[in-house]
Length: 247
Image 1: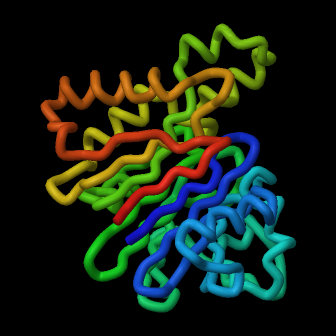
Image 2: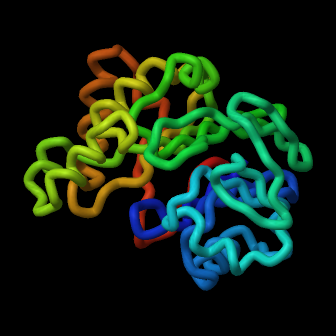
């Protein structure tokens, strides 16, 4: 399973999941040019995308859907309305080509927001961003994935030091906001297993976080939990650069 995180952050999000000549796009909140640049990494074109999976309705995840024409879209009924939309529900598995996909509930200030478990019979990807907390039921579905793309949005101290309005800070810190580095690492320490090969930290705030802080939080919490990070490729997605994962 090959992963191409084209962009990840508050300005736009899109990720490609590719395996055995089948290709999924998770979210489309970027420009058409950026999407094409990501597709070039795996020598693919727009016509090669089998389906678009949408996590929620916010524009940084949906603004570029208009560029994709008649592509099948899978999302909750609250997320997007269109002729090609297939309605999905949390924890109800569906298939796209050989991929088995299970939507998982997230906690965000967008009704019907979800993440995705994507399996191909051999490997399992867990994709979960834009959530202020993770329910126990969702954590069960997340256990022992091969690959994780997981939100690590902010450093709490750095968030408080920004010039953002107090109401926005409270929204980010709430159970319907975004995961801090520490919260993300604690949740992940509960679900990684012997199959886990890679964790990509996603949706990092450019104002209230940086890769060094996110990685430091993970290393500290995983060490306390006696998890051997030497066996896991831990790195960060970016708003400005394409990041590759998987194999």
